[in-house]
Length: 279
Image (cartoon, rainbow, N blue to C red; front, side):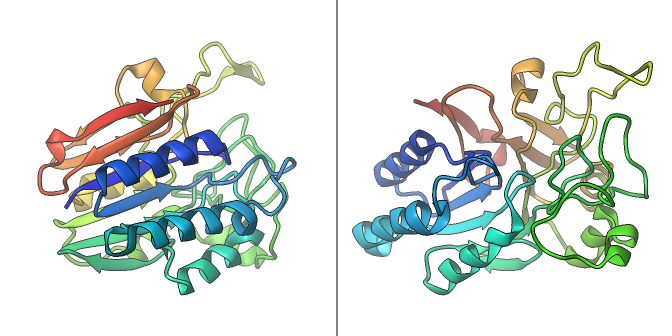
């Protein structure tokens, strides 16, 4: 089973076109898209999902017929959750599987999706949750503050964490699990932000901004493969887009260049994964 993984396309038409061209060329079995799908919240390309994304993949499905890949998709912290219903509608049309907080078994592997990230400095909080406790790092905005595009019970915001969600979602044997996250695991090659020398209230902020809960989940539960995005500059700073955490292979497709970062892997042989940058 040949898989493609991309993340953080941020509504850039050139990146989506590069992905579609590569799908036509290589005909992968599975394509995973790890969030931050849309243009900036204040600069939406019309109705990006309805006017561009759905027609583009619908056209691809018509062209490829039985060679159309299984597509798994989640949103990311820059995607307004009010747009989520359009992704669900497209799922009912057979264009993709909306994977957030779900498990779908395909070709002998269990695919899980989870879109939430720990608190960030940004104001949009639709896809943010406390990580392992009600703690917000220096320089970040609490999930209890900021703005949202849908209503959420304040009690849920206050008491539900990424750690609790993962405990509820991912149960049983994960030896053949492929977990599609938006957030990367904490203090790894995949979550290194460009924050050196950034002082907030006279304190150097943490340059690692990933999820402690996701890191502990990987260490303790050892899924086969985990996929991540969110921190665009991490691989440029660390020189690595992958990390081995015990037996788990973790990959990031986030990238701060102009190209599309595409990770290709066979889940039976994750150690042979490769990343290519497509103009």
